[in-house]
Image (cartoon, rainbow, N blue to C red; front, top):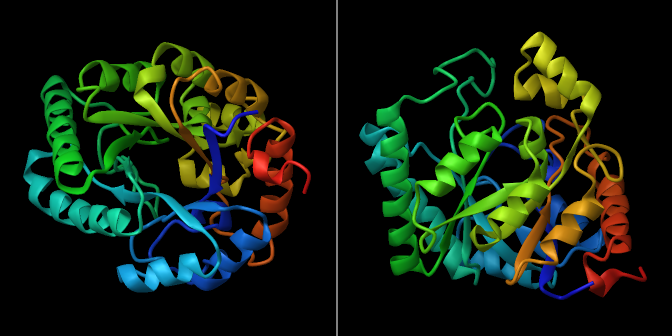
Length: 303
């Protein structure tokens, strides 16, 4: 058990995927329940869900004795024609992230399926030119974030995106500058793509300072492969499960993270969209207690 592993949670664990959506928990209830569940740190989630005025956000977070681990943004790095719009959005999120004292920006690539209909809107694989654009874009964006906001770019591999499988994750890391680009290691999405999170931690430890910890149900993963399910459909079928169920085993991930020679934020994410309002809090509380029992989140070990 070590203080260098910092436990937190995110709006995703309360069923929040979008800035506004009728199926989602109101932001003030999320913050209240996050505190009630015993978490001290939070990731901001989709820009516009929580207040975007820095003073209001700082006040709402501070009065609940919460602290911000990082911001969250979505964008396409493999499309040069989308650079200007993407950068404009990223700057807004980075400015808010820095204003509330956080130094990590979780960057989620676009899915190649529509987020509402789950129809394919892009090829699931990138060609050589798109990979080159992706690497160039990540390096440039990482420099901008570090120089202008003192924020680290953390690329989040994601189901139904072009950085999903372990070979794709490794290709991304091998083609980008370690000084400016790191990985948000999402253990569940790595498992979804057939990868090994513990192996990635041990071989790319210097690129990992931020983690999303989650587990996937292997039975639903088999359905994904057999039926070509979208990630959204897999979530509806319960692919994301609370520990200790699912893959990978949280204890093995925590053991590997303890070997990383850096402070690491470990943020709980259990994709629950859509869910009933009373569902997330009991799960969050049980999850926090379980992770405490594995040596993560020392402050609340006896709670």
